[in-house]
Image (cartoon, rainbow, N blue to C red):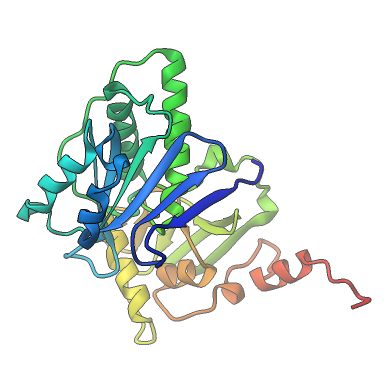
Length: 294
């Protein structure tokens, strides 16, 4: 995949206010708004188009975890304003809407985009999905289906730009076919045994890996919260003797992955090892080409 150019515009000149984002020459446009700026969003014509929206906020039951709600509408702002009055959906503090710059999105298109986004969010389990029902996508031609998939890919990239990771699928084993066995890292000890692949800067712990039930006093509060989050999401299940990973799961750091696995405060670069005993640190250091003339 080649590089992409994303243009972000701060509508009111601040990073905390209304923002728009576009990818190069694509037709997808995103508008990000804090919940307190819905009046400003109402003044923008994008808010009154057919589109898809995502409500984002903290999960009130799991510290450190996000909640999301995905919806669509012919006038997305009207749907968002209804949610603003709905006490059952009071979790959100920001919203991102997505429309087409050429205004070619139809009701069938946005229903399909909504269904696809929810499918991704339920599979990845990176956030709590507030939607209770599974929407039925619109009936589309083969060409329109391909365009919807492209729109979803663009939408996910823009959401990531806004710091929303709920729709970022972890690499799956078929997608990892290029990774050779020598780049699989292992971590094992009393009550845990895990394997991990380093892919595109993320540390993907493989499904079937086990994590220790007990937590050492040294384990950081953030790692304790993350373990609880993964249990709540079903990424980890209690097998009685250990926690088991039910799916491939990506972590942003090697230490974050290692601490979830062994239940202690450890350095991922020191404890993850190749089959020959090479540590992650040694592997990464040897992979960097230094210019000896500098």
